[in-house]
Length: 140
Image 1 (tube, rainbow, N blue to C red):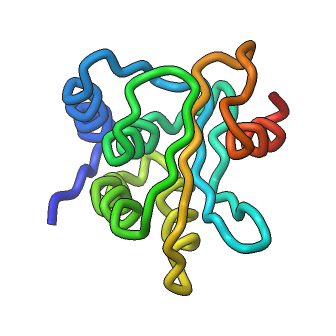
Image 2 (image 1 turned 120 degrees about the vertical axis):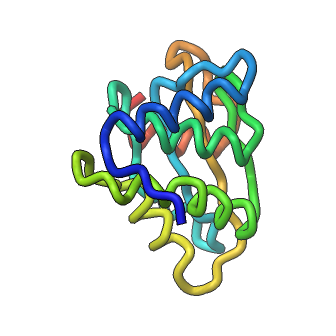
Image 3 (image 1 turned 135 degrees about the vertical axis):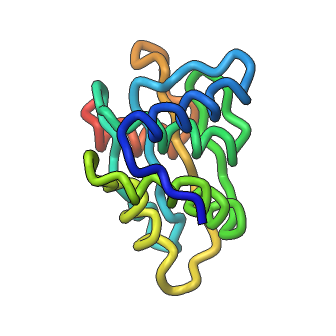
């Protein structure tokens, strides 16, 4: 299995993912939530100014996100793919990996419904109820 051991290898992987999405713009905030009957259960919330950029582009790769404010409902297979794509970064001890760890937690129990939220412009109105709930978490 591939492993990115150094910060430089993680940065290079991030750039490869970015280069594979023409027009990609890193969001100012992003996150993932499990959609349950009782509402949303959030994984790690990447607030404005956060430093975990690789998970953003991995999530964008799986969801098809390019730029702008958007939410994407997706299934367990897609989420498993995102986890698989991000896993090689765990070998790098220069960083914590709260996204990867929380994504794995969200998958426990066989849950099937998830949503990704990307925010590029906080001045724009939320695109839907998922975006609104996410912004409430980040204070935007």
